Image (cartoon, rainbow, N blue to C red):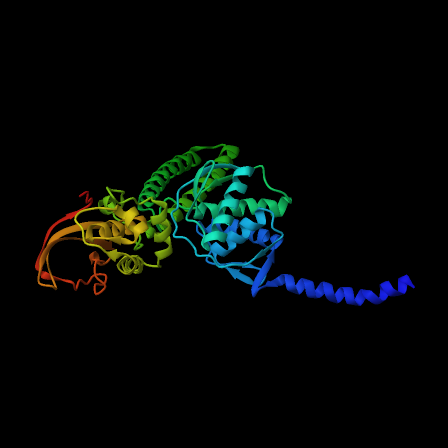
Length: 401
């Protein structure tokens, strides 16, 4: 009798289990994900960041599409013991990337995950930086650190004893390193001359020898040298063709690619943004950078430098000098020469003021004027002051005031 009752109850139990499973998928209108699904996604995020050296725009977990903030919060919950995680949409913080190269112990990884989890749950936004017992870590590196931790846990079934990280972001955003091109051309040309010299000597020995075995050995050597010579010629053509690229910068202009006062070309936040703004051509990239600074940085009136390129990007405001610092830094970081121009300008208001703006060098166009201080300006065209009446006082590689 008991067996019959048990069998009769089985279909009902199965139905209840199915309903419970469906209930676990949605909680108060929000999807709930399993920790294993989130940990599986961390494998893909780790691989993406190491390959592309940036954050992914979206992360797919089951049928949900998460932004980096939503994903990182869910991952922090999964790493700190939650079996399921309710999907939320916290605000993504502005990036304040710091270059990190070091080792994080298991306890520090869990501490960082816990602090991000608690802060996000309380404030409904991810923190831009997290202070922990070992120092401070920014959001970008937190995403990478927790993703590497999650990837290990997913593949090994437990937390790692330590996690080594090196911030996955390049030193600069160059499409083409002109110095490397020149050095490769010089090196290959020298190798060609040396190879040609040895080939000629081998050919002379071939003509003079009367020994068949020696002749066969010399012929094999000559064929090998000739193959090397042909390969070097192909390499030389490749690098010489790169000199015709719009991204190639003549040696005389490379001083306008270097870091100067208030203008760091290796600041990780500037490098990250420059790579995001990069287009297929130098002009399109220059225009993209120009429009971003013009439209994203509010104009503030004050004298001289206050923030520099790094601070202007962080605070999103600046006078003509600080906007010029940021524009120059983004251009140079992208491999586009840029310089400062100082002048005395007659503005559309009728007033005369000292003013600073930028020129960027575009192959085939030369130095192109770029003044981001007014929305009516475009790359190469200034409308908020009279170019004919105004006077250029000097062009500068560095503006330190």
